[in-house]
Image 1 (spheres, one colour):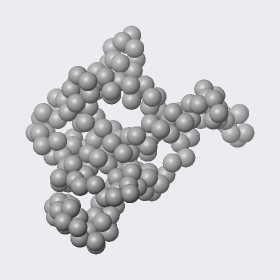
Image 2 (cartoon, helix red, strand yellow; image 1 turned 180 degrees about the horizontal axis):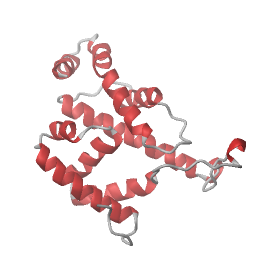
Image 3 (cartoon, rainbow, N blue to C red; image 1 turned 60 degrees about the vertical axis):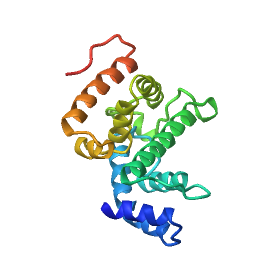
Image 4 (cartoon, rainbow, N blue to C red; image 1 turned 30 degrees about the vertical axis):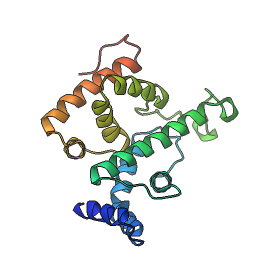
Length: 191
């Protein structure tokens, strides 16, 4: 991934081929992160990892390719883009026009309902994450990198330029904070 920083510098210098090189250099990593993130989402979510990567890329590139300082800055922007895409999708599904609070039920599921795994209310998570960002923006960025971009603790620590031990402590704090906010303060966080 050292190539990413070099390609970003070439992109900023106006190299016409750098955008294509950047996409080639980061595509597989972004796809892996999107796959990991979507595997933890609701089972009725129709968004595929490839579509999430492409939508995030379109948002990152926009009309004119922005400048990123380095690999860390690029992946933080990618995590933010993926987060916004998933939040917008959750809001869209909650609108009355799209069925609001009514869940979709397939005819085959009427007799034997399938368990709904460990899904989370993305809107509640987004609100809780906004509160955490007001308290400590770097801890909120760690959550974005871990939850929305699917980075491991060591990878997120590298992106944030902190030690793994610090990332572990921040992650434990952020998880407890978010759990408390999402649960409404009524339950103790899981151990």
